[in-house]
Length: 147
Image (tube, rainbow, N blue to C red; front, side, top):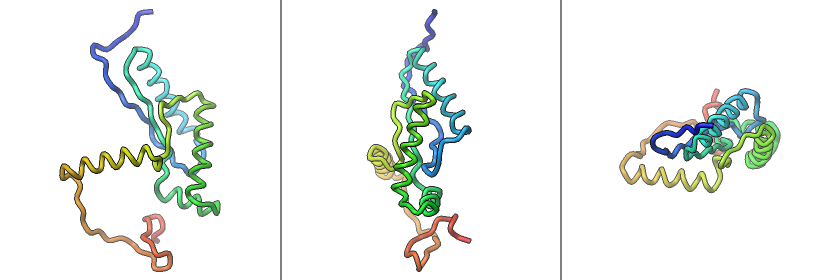
């Protein structure tokens, strides 16, 4: 078999849409992950330097809403769903180089690193914004909670 190679090896980072950590992987997710996994396997076959990463999205109102519905903490929901997602990907032979959650120590490290580099170059600024605050809950509310 003739090997295909690009003229210059590239470093390629591939990811897929991050599934929310509020429920099971569904067919729509699987279509994307299977296609992406095939693409990454092809890149490896032609000897490209590729890294396939993804994570459960553990931030936002969907997690909080589902956890409240199940009467568990968001952290417990995230842990339970993460285990299910990892097993689902294994069952479908989808192979990530790294699969974490968006609240993992790795993600925090790199998010902080990127943020601080942008801030130090003057790309981050602060400004006052109006938010909805609940006196009963003693917290600001996501848009989904405001009617």
